Length: 258
Image 1 (spheres, one colour):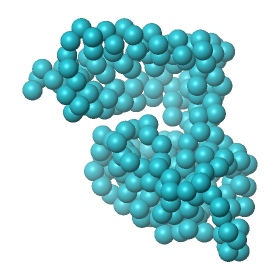
Image 2: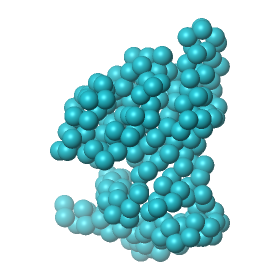
Image 3: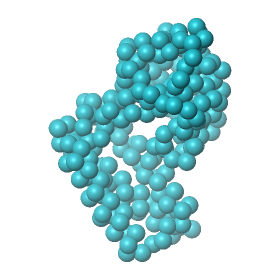
Image 4: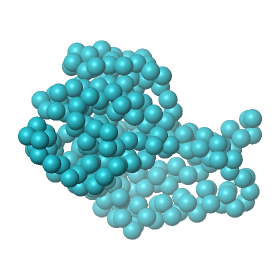
């Protein structure tokens, strides 16, 4: 028996495709919605999801954990609304579900799932963006999110293994989508720096504005061969590097506004 759980906020463009990709394997769909102003909730309800409304939090993982906590089935798949489950992954989940229903002993507590990340018209194959494994499938009660950072992995109580198949991650189909999330993530990082009471001096300035951007670009574009992914690989590397100075400048703005 499978629970599929999601946290959403203004995902009317994505939610239907996501839920359609798992409706034939899900015994329960849980959606925790952060008070969307669009039709996300209505679409999810039409597709027979149980929808719970809460506030939209800057750290989205808090709402993800809320959805995970509401799952009632033994096997849980946590998805983002911009992700689809491919056929190979569905077949793998069916096999795990069958083993559970037959009361076979499951040695694994959670499974890493490989992701294909779609960026401005293509799936990125390099730049550290593939296979991009994430823990999303787990035995209920065996995994959870610390909810400290937007890019954290689940903490698992037990053994892990790799699932067959992929999540197809359509997080940035256009550059406008990417920029919107870039603003969100850099603002979240700026708030983290503020809460950590980061010192403002030439060392921290140089680290965030010069050294980290250079290192990030080098790692993504050269060491991890982001150049293989045409102009999309170059743009991704540049803006990944810019994440550091933009977050730092937002941190300075917050610090000196208080």
